[in-house]
Image (cartoon, rainbow over all chains, first blue to last red):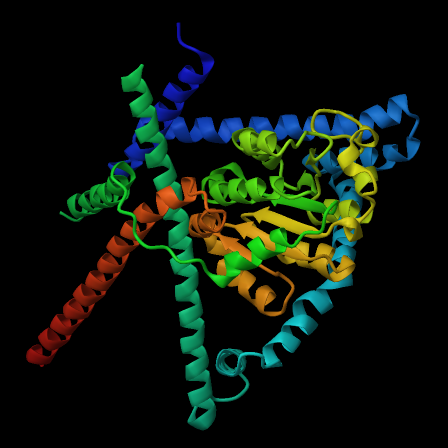
Amino acid sequence: MMSADLVGMYVAVALTLMLWSYLYKETILYRFAEYTFIGMASGHLFVITMLQIRNSVLVPLVSKGEYLLAIPLILGVLLYTRYSPKTEWISRWPVAIMVGVGTGLVMRAMVHAQFVAQIISSITINDPINDTVIAVLTACALAFFLFTREQKGIFGGFTRLGRIAIMVGLGASFGVAATTRLTLCISRIQFLIESIQKMLGA
Amino acid sequence: MKMIVRRALFLLMFVMLAAPLLRPLGLPLTVGSLTKGVYDMVEDLPTGSRVNMALTMTVGLWAEVEPATMAVLRHLFTKPVKIIIVSYFADAPKLIEGTLTKVADAAKASNKRYGEDFVNLGFVPGLETGMAAFTKDSAATTPSDIYGTPVAQLPAMSGVRSAKDFALVIVIRDSPMDPYIRQYVTTYGAKLVTVGVAAGLTADMPYYKAGQILGIVAGVRGGAEYELLMKSPGPGVATTDALSLGFVLLVVLAGSSNVMYAWERMKSRSGKGSQK
């Protein structure tokens, strides 16, 4: 009799091959695997969220008498009023609170983390060659986005250099993105090889 | 014709990736300063300090990060520190639970016990809002661990109040580092390193240069480097040969397609010239 792990492995192998059938052409097998994945991911997220609401809000509210937790619970329920045109306006209140809290939390640290620290880092020279290149190319890349002045002459030279710097940056991003995709493919191939070895061994 | 060529290329890529997995080539691998930064930070952890392993990972990209996560966990288990794991994405608690099972041998070898030396606090919703709450008051944000045990009964959590109590924060992620920099580094001055997907490397570099991130293990290559530093080659090293061959094919294809494009363009221009 097959163990649950072995059944799981067979299912995973089948789903992997179904998804890869897309490389030949879009097939019904591919669609089945795709919808299965989306359905399972949604189901998992739903269960995790419900458990979170139960453990963090409902249990303390009911069994421990932490009545303040009723406020976020009510605000959460109010979000669903948006599905009716008549009550849609009510959902703006919880959305406004979420946006307000989120913006406040981000803004308290954003200026230093993403502006001041980055500017200081760009103009601080520790490694003379690299840091000078970074400082100059950063200035040139920023100059490329100045559209209030015609990009010609010496200024045009700066902006052209900035454009090249942006293209090099995008190229590097593409390269590392390709690494990620190749790694995912390798991991699946590795899984298939190991599974086939197990199947043959069994 | 184009469709046949496309399918042939997919097949060629499959062969290039699968061949080194069946017969490893043992291509040379050097350790970069980014990975060494993470290794050194873990190596220099003082006795009894607490490490926060924070995850923003989804299941789709876990394969790229898991080898490095395993290597870092194995390293952490050799140190006299407490590991507090928290997840800001819903997928992550189960992912790290599986990885903890895979490195259970290392925990056992170092006599590390769940609850005393490491804990998995599970999922904290709200991403940056949840992060801000956890860094401000960890026990109030996660009153129990993933198995429902109250944090008061977990010795590893004793003395943990805010992000200031962590000697090191190790971020395992496939999403941008910005929230961590804002909530952990800028607000609490936490020392932070990251293990992430390679695709995030270029976005992380400005933070690394500014000293806001002290080390980066990028993708499976970074994981392989960490395994070399640990002197125990594992799944990271096993996949780097395939990755290298895959890249050779990508470079050849990118180069040849550019040459073909330039050739076509030249031909069409000369065609227009002769028509005139």
